[in-house]
Length: 203
Image 1 (cartoon, one colour):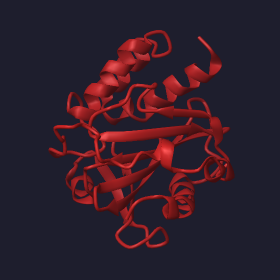
Image 2: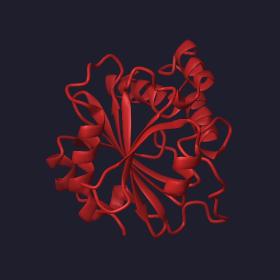
Image 3: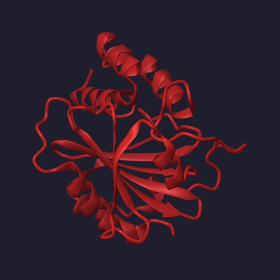
């Protein structure tokens, strides 16, 4: 398997799958880089309720992601490259598979993955989710924005900025890549990236 795919798979192991210890253990012990199809299925289940996801609630719409902001098509390449991410590494969904409830776009940098998640879920869903913690206001990003982490991320390898939108919310997510030591505090980086991205995101 190519190095890029391996880095992507292990990053998802620690971010999406890392939301729940069982899912994380399944990815690690099953060698995520060798069972790509299984990782996709587990991650998809996580997002729609098979394992606890970033947010809880019932935001599923009959048409799936119809009407959601699409970060891959809407955010200009020059903005992403200006943030230090590799435009050529752009990936939609989870390992290329689109998910219900979310439009997800990710890009790789040298030591982290930048993700923009578009959803019908709201910041109230984040606040109600017992798996989300360290919720703080992020006034630099805009009115109502917050930063938060996942409770099971005991090593501090991810941070998210949630921005309210009419559709629900936009999450700007930073995940440190597997085996990489963060070069700066992740919530500070996520906040700075969100400030730059904000003009290109929906209200």
